[in-house]
Image (cartoon, rainbow, N blue to C red; front, top):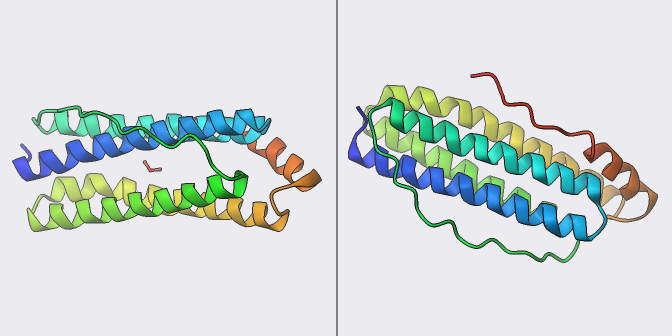
Length: 168
Ligand code: FEO
């Protein structure tokens, strides 16, 4: 059984993960409109990953005998300046998510809930990867200044990304 405090915090995180999914789905649409179909695909995969994250929290709350209380999902932005702006916003968002995960770990430690501390470790590692992959793309985009044949190549590469649910 999880404490009410942990249950509330995990429910907020389910909402935050669904918001992330929504944000990336909005970015996928924006990039599609820019004819960057590879990057649009990349964001669509990101959308699927975030839904996976949300469901991982959802299943954990149920497994621990808690109650899932879904909340309204905020409206994400739908316009950015350019592709670099999209990835800068993505990096900033992922850094906020990392902070949220760290706050959750701190709360679980405070509550002496070792099972939740363990469960959250997967997300701690995931955030390291998430930030690193976005930083890498952002650096490449800046290298080609977000335009020209360099951008075309990067877009082709981004088209290769597909969603594979991580092993439990
Ligand atoms: Fe669910 Fe992108 O972290």
